[in-house]
Image 1 (cartoon, one colour):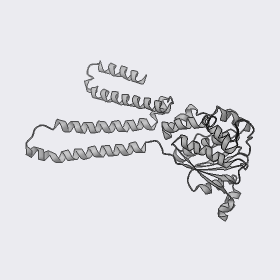
Image 2 (image 1 turned 180 degrees about the horizontal axis):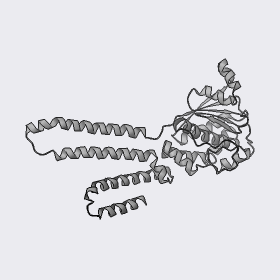
Image 3 (image 1 turned 135 degrees about the horizontal axis):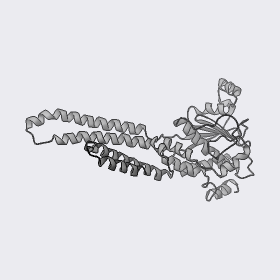
Image 4 (image 1 turned 180 degrees about the vertical axis):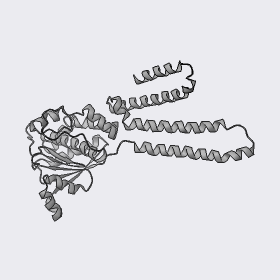
Length: 341
């Protein structure tokens, strides 16, 4: 549609008398629009997400394409000017033109170097691996959960989980850290921050999180609790844990590398569209949220802008949990850990 509108505009302007001076501008504009259309289609194919025009215009790929195009135009102009001046000349004139030629070469190199730096700066953010540790003795099989996290590591290359099997105890902290966390309204999250040491971190516990039913998040740190999850109902306990880990991983990445995820207004939210990052205060809302887990169009666009199409494709697949609900993972859970589907 956009290409068609541009073609009509070019044809209209080209048909008017006295518009010859605009021909170079129209030609450059046509090349720029064509380049952006190709990039848009590539991004759509790679991610499987249909982006709105406004989202694409704010995306890293549009900006990279614009910077690259401007750099190419500048370099082509310099090279073209040099070619026009490359007529047969005496050796004295060629020697006299050597210095300007060197200057033009230096400008070309500088333009390409600046474009490369800017394009690199506009590239999707690279996320970090996430450390996982158990807070206290869990009421579930931590090795079964570790198996699922290892499966997640094998299913994608966007991020990895590093598991510490030593159960955390407050005695590991200094006296000052313990006293500070004991006074905190969210003590387990405080402990997790102390353990994180500035890196992405998820603590998993069977203890209560107070008013927060399932998890707490602050920046690059989360704590997930199984205290209010009934393992006898679907979704099962390990489905819940896998869902909670994946969702919190995305929240951590958005907070740590992309300015955070859209937050709800404070207070109870009575309406939900099933978005992954919506705050759901009612325990009964957990089951449908996990069974129908998916990325909403808004969430897809947010993740594409921050991390690129590969991240979105991976996130869409792992959050749906189809990988967990089918063989061979179900068979391995039953055979290796006695967990029946």
